Length: 150
Image (cartoon, rainbow, N blue to C red; front, side, top):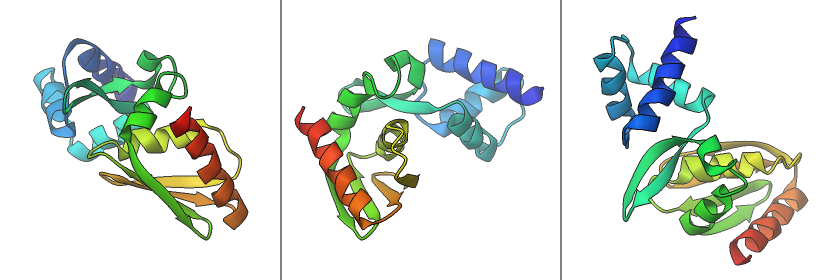
C-alpha cells in the first residue's frame, strides 16, 4: 500500500513541478514525508513508465508517458529528435541517443510491441535491443529508418 501512495505522490510531484533528476524526485518525496532511497525511486520510475521529455532547449524533465498521448504517438517525434545513430551486429541493435535520452528511446522501442524484441537495456545515451535473431535485427533497423525518415 505504501508503494501505491508513494507512486501517486510521484505523479502528483511531476505534474506540478519540473523534476529533472532522480535526486530531485527523491528530495521532493522526502519533503512530503516519504522515506525513500534513490533505488526505490528508480524502481518507481520504471513501474510508472516515466520518461524524460524536452521542455526547454537542453532541458529535460520527468513526465508520465500518457502526457504524450502514448509513447508511440507524440513519442515518435521525441524518438526522432533524440536518435543520433543506430546499427546492429547479429541479433543486437544498438541505438545512440542525445545525452540522457536512452531510457525514452528504449521505452519507445518496447512500445512498438514488436514480438521479435526480446528486451532492451538503456544507459545514458545508448540502448541495446536484443532481438530473436539476426534477420529480426535487420528488420528493426528498417523500421527505425522509416520512423526517422517519416
